[in-house]
Image (tube, rainbow over all chains, first blue to last red; front, side):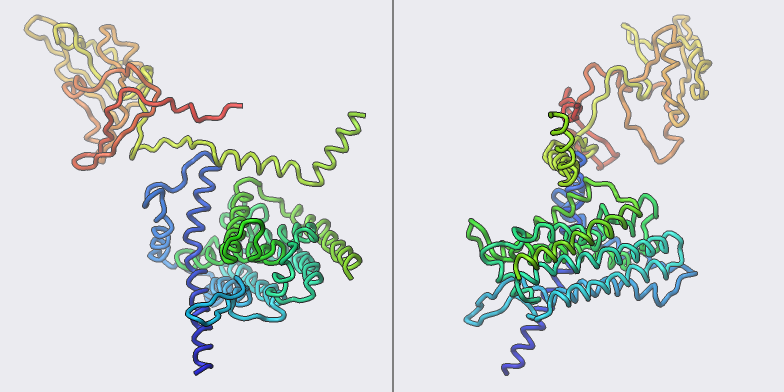
Length: 328
Length: 188
């Protein structure tokens, strides 16, 4: 009975997580278009629903009813595999992400995470690396020059950014003496990590921008020079998979920034429910992502590599060394 | 001294991304400025200036008679040959147009017909909503041209409007003068 209840609870949590992650891109696309519009003194979507609120639903219906086109020369198996490979890892990663300590519902304590792994951070970084394969396969399988170019750029970009990203979080691990995300947040109860690790946060966030393939590092899908990059040949629901994946990674980088550097659900000054604090911080980072997108131009390919290898990597190494000297 | 300070300040700014911060501040400021979108045709509509060259109209004189003397100068000067005039002699012995047709599908709204007219009978008015599903509907005859709205007296404003799709697609408005569209444009 005990086991059945525990299993049922985990199944419920996973289902809730999947539902949230699948539905969250809807308000996010609306927000992104609204923010883009207002930054450019436009209004954004206005026609469907109140202030265009139902626009994402209309877009979703459009994508679902569109022809699912596969190019004649494409590698059909890889072409079908790629969107799933891009979509699944961001969802899997959220298994290891804690959203709070626990809440008591009807007398039973329910933890706000699916599992508390002791190597959660490693798990997150490892699994999110798989997402890149979706992008690479998608571009390769389409057999189109724009898509292949987008994939090639993704390969080079990921090699230069996964390493600084991994190094940047080591400082946090050293401070918390644990790789469990739950312990990392608990260690920040008094002082947030951003105070001790500003350089680490900078490197992590820049690498996160590259990881999420957002402007200024969206070279894989640069509209200006590559059509649509790796998903040039995708349409309908497969294209929607890539879009949902992109938003999930964006959400993941925001959540990781909050957990690793901004104290997770620990609040300051204003006493709010921990979950609300967490949501507010994540929302702020999501806004920063969109804000960056409509402010900065795209970096050139060689500039991107130069930043990755010549700036971020030495910075992250120096950060590890200074943290080590100061705290160990 | 001040030069050294200036140079070191520039380097410190470069190291801490002062230029990027400036850009972010600019876009953040823009986000809370008013939008310049004119919500045509749902909510707003633009009123043309009096110099605007829209749909042609034919004028009448004080006795209510058509001013046109059917000299065909407009048809002759028209660069796209879209005006067709057939004259006749009325009871008073005046030369008047029996047929005055303008093919709006071909017209390029240059306004040369208005300049050429010796009787000040034809002009380009303020109407700009006359799209059609058939190019045949765009050939407008004499009596229709007499009923078209004339030059705008006020203009350059944005007024509240309503889209009416019950019979024909119409953008209705009752306000004579709206707000100046340029008020939200930033000039630096």
